[in-house]
Length: 352
Image (tube, rainbow, N blue to C red; front, side, top):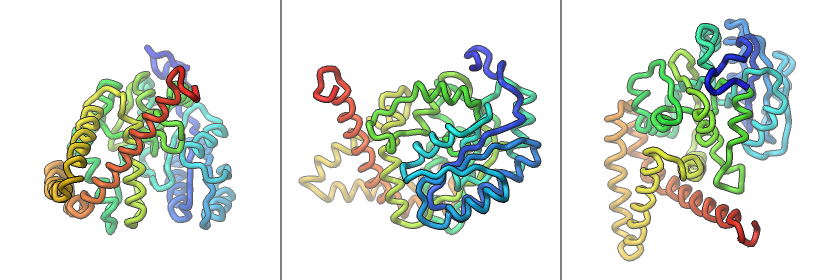
C-alpha cells in the first residue's frame, strides 16, 4: 500500500485499468457507457479489465451484456437484485488490476478523459485519486435539471469556476464528489473500505459515496478537473424522482451525521426547524403550507443566484416543495435508523 506521506510512490504506472460497473435495468445506457469507455481507453493506449455486475435486471440488459461481452471482451457477473453497494463489491472482487475506475451505467465518459488522466498521473505520480467532473444532461428532463441546480448550490465553490483543484478531509464538504466516476488505486480503496462503517444496519441504505470518500480524503488528496469529464443522464418520471429524493434523504444522514463540517451543522439546523414547523403545523396546518410556499419562492432564486440555467431555475420552482417533503421524510427515516442501530450496538443492549 502507498505510504501516507508519499502517495503513489509504490504504484505501477497507469498502463492497465480495472473498471467496475454495476447495472440494473439499463439496456440503453449500459451500451452507451461501454462504447464511450472503450473509445477513451483506445485513445489512451490503456489495457482495460471491465467487470459489469448485473444486479438482477428484468429488462433486456442481460441480452445487451452478452452482446457487449462478445464484442469487447468484458466480463459479466450476475447476481440477484441486492443494490449498488453489493453489486460493486462483487465486481471489485473480480477486478484484476491495481488501478480501479468505479463507473455507473448512466455516466458517459468524455473521449479525452482517460488520455488526459493517464498523462497527468505519469507527470504527477502523487495525484492518485480523481473524481470525475460531471455535467448533467438536462434537456427535456426537469427532474435531472432539479438535481443539477442543487449541485450548483451545494458546491458553488467549484461549479462557479470549474478548474483543477484538490481537497482533503478539511475541505471535504466544499467540492463535488462521488463514486459514480472515481479513479484510484485498488489498495487505497481497500484500505478506505476497511475503515468504512455505516450508521445503519441495512447496507442497502448506506452512503457508499460520501462516507466512503471521507475515508479516502483522510489518507490523500482527491483531485477534480473539467479535463476528466463525464456526462450523467438522469432518470425521468415523477415516481423515480420521489423514490430518489426519499433515498437521498436517508443516505444524506449516513454521510454527514456525526461528521465535522458545515453540512452537519446545516443538517442539525434543518432537522430542528422541521421539527418546530411540524409541531406547530399539527395545530395550525396553514403553517406547513406557508413553509412550503416559502421554499417554492426561495429555491429558484437561490439556484439562479448560484448560476443555474433557466431549466434548472424552472425545475427548482416546480419541484422544490415535493423534494422538501420527500427528502425530509428520508432524513427522518435516516435519523430513526441511526438511533435504532446505535441502540442495538450499545453495550448491554438486548442485541449486543
